Length: 463
Image (cartoon, rainbow, N blue to C red; front, top):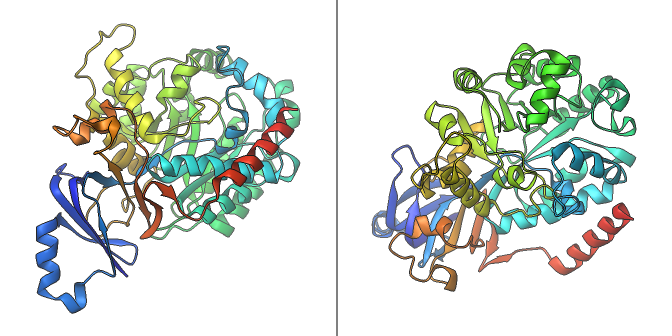
């Protein structure tokens, strides 16, 4: 099947040359991008062999910026169930986690499924087409399978990570003892979900990652064994939280005698198959190690702000060659699931600066922040088939309208207006060649009953 999208005010390729095509168009064929260029160029190409090249369906994307689908590199979809708990009152990470662990411990398969579906719907409407999720607790029979079921129903490209916690309070960890798992059971379930779900092929819609939760909730032995298991498989990546807060720095020094990045290195957790969430407090030496090892970092600005974790030195990491993507993070440590809005936050936060660095409006441009959410996300997830609009790449793309009220007057630079103006919702979204959002509506989902189902699950958790 061929689909032609043409007439875009601007087509943002995010290719190596950073091309932006006025009046741009793209031809899709059977879930892949076949050709990219101006609308006139593609119409002429079709006219050369109309019987072979004529599209089965045309989309008029005039008035839109057309760009690669956004890639969310770190999330906790289950947290849609507990928004605003602790964040409104100003809790920091460790205190916030201690407040929420017992509530999350009441989750069951229904809660995991419906929370994932609600969070993914929000993300899709914000322009996301690929989502990496980190589920690290499995109470009351909940499994990673429950989140996967929701993603498959929606048609989102999904990178679920099988998280884990094995060190409870009695062993000096942060989580309650009731929520940690036996390490042999963790590794066995990691093997199960890889065997059952992981697809390493190009264009894959589902890849499993392994993700021990954090230095304060798993053992060194589990970190090592998880890395060995992932590296015995094809395209199974490693993920964890690291360097999120000053409290974590202190914990690692007191517990292990090493700062977080050095601790990760001692466990074999640096490399091009690893990406870390947050990395708010790296030293200059840490940044050098991340760049040299090709380890990835997922920046989560809103979560870092709402929990007062700090401002990650994104500018320095980028300038020194660290692979960097963007994540919404947990719906309860952000309270929203808007990936385009997260790109805006990343841009603004870098401009504000941090202790020892003056505020500078040119520290991060809108285009750099958008690229974090496309090419950057593809890089940290190890996806060379995503992140740009080029022939041979997967057919994941999103169109945002620029002729609406919020963008009136922004036509001089519609690409920058995506972030300098209020974040928009997707008007059209195609994933793997399948139309998921059309005319701003999420197809195949009746949202009011889903929201009510989610409200029931949330009330059961919160009591």
